[in-house]
Length: 132
Length: 72
Image 1 (cartoon, rainbow over the protein chains, first blue to last red):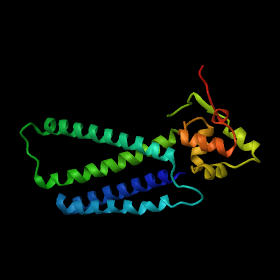
Image 2: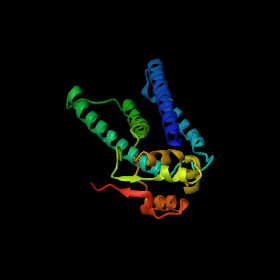
Image 3: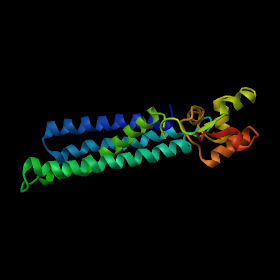
Image 4: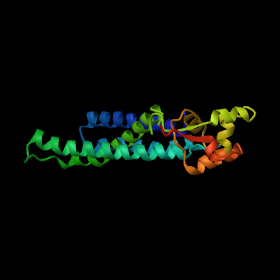
């Protein structure tokens, strides 16, 4: 298993823990602003750098970089598809003149970053599994 | 780059002809990972020109003797 695959699995685990933490805090406090504290867990992604320590030879090479670029592009596509889907669905579900409490809006950028991490990691694992 | 590419190679054959060189040894010699050598041997990855030249140099042959373009 390559360093990039290990990193992707680790990131997915961190993102799962983050989602659970945010949902638990939101359920307990009922306050989205407080629930944002759960997103601090995302900083644990930094610890994944240890997967890229060089052992016998390089940890990553041109193929890993190539797959990484493709995974990044896929994650951007997923992000924009979700962005457009949510932008379209919310007015349809709540009505064109509905208002969203600002305390919920604070979750949006965090959720976007979370989605990018998840999409990129999942795409990386998928590309390696396909043998690309 | 999923699936077979029109570029095939003789890396596995050349490795065995060179004292049964391991994939790890070749990977270290060319500055790549073993996974990349595995993908190359399975024709699932088309290497950069730089990597192709490095592989050819390890076996002391020309690039065309390592990589073959299947044009049919």
